Image 1 (cartoon, each protein chain N blue to C red):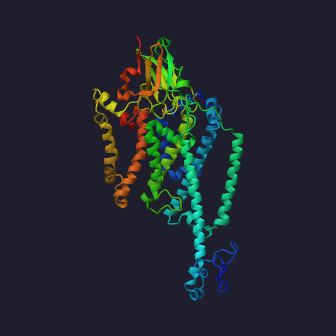
Image 2 (image 1 turned 30 degrees about the vertical axis):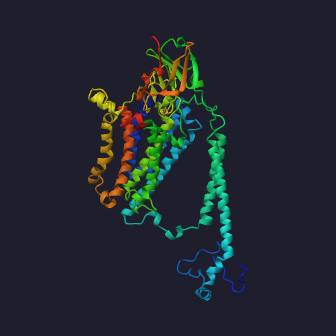
Length: 363
Length: 216
Ligand code: FES
């Protein structure tokens, strides 16, 4: 039903991670930048309808259908719809509220404050109980309708190809492609948890508590949504629908061919520096060998925060204080650096910035 | 009501009316809830002492002591059971040593998968050497696949790729696959011993135990 030329183009564009992620990030920032216009039903409705129509037309493509209809993947499709809907709802509320705040009105949530208060018992507990029953029914029906894929007993000599983590860990698995196991599997998850736990200490601004707003908290909302939507949800999408056999990238209408050949020769920064740039052999001393990478990291995490304090974050720095600013900026740079490292791999095939295979330590 | 003191009953504390009968009164009129000052003044020190009599206190201690003892016992048994779990009766590990036949079984430069399932090694003939590569990805330990058409070893987990000789060249794997010890026995067969490993990045691939030279 879809024209072949369209499928070709879509496969070509969307099997490139760099292009797909760039499109997603561009769309993300466009939506936030124009959030008042984009969330208006006249814009949001045709947009989502268009996507749904495109999705329905795509089902006629056999390759698309195979991937979409795997019982593991059906919930991911539902999740994408749900996340999109909820994000729209939140941004829409924020847009409406921001208009009210500009007119000097209180946010919508502040109206009828008195009637807002209800009892935990029975009001809340009943609602929770009903939600619990509905969820149980949905799960039971679902598990009957979509059989969970049971495979043959595990065999250590045969790893399934592609071998995928549970869906909620696909983002972490994707990070593992770009980082040392130890960084991606231990350091990054710990940082995510500590970083989320640190939010109340980093961010003392009471604005936005209990009501939707974007205008009053543009930085905080953008960072959080970027982390959640792009670095978690989108990476789940990527792991589910783009990663095929041999962990190669595939387009939406592409057949998952085991023999798809993608030359991905990856190179360490030290090799780029000494062999390609200076045209000489790698130094034997590993500290000298990794000096360029260590320098890059030192500048990125050591110098850049200070430069940013004087420039982009000039306004934040005095109100936050040194320690709080440093914690915030390093978490921020960590998030940006993660994305940067992925791009470096996609575009320059850069493997590791600092590589000490001698000590199982690579960044 | 404690039986020790029937003559001086304390008015029951707690909500004056059954739950849900009426919404709580707005703040300011709800100050009736605490014990009226007159009653409290009439029984100055007795109230506290009576709430927690010696008998009650000891009872409380012994019950909570019992509870803690039970909890510690259960945790103790649990940790012993967990500890026992660390020493299984049977270990499903592939045998470390295997005879892989004479070098003539591997006539041309290729990756031979015969001992992959049973022993977790590829026998590789490449550039005048026969080596035993361990089938464990150096990234996170998945078992990679030998793709003969592409002439490379490719990991299905995060896409690391290795050349036939085990050198990593694509994806995240930070170092080459490891070699196992391989020696030529007197009877002309080769013997692989996975207990001894040779890592390229440590320069161990020059070790004569890590390969068997053959005429290319
Ligand atoms: S385990 Fe082989 S690429 Fe990660």
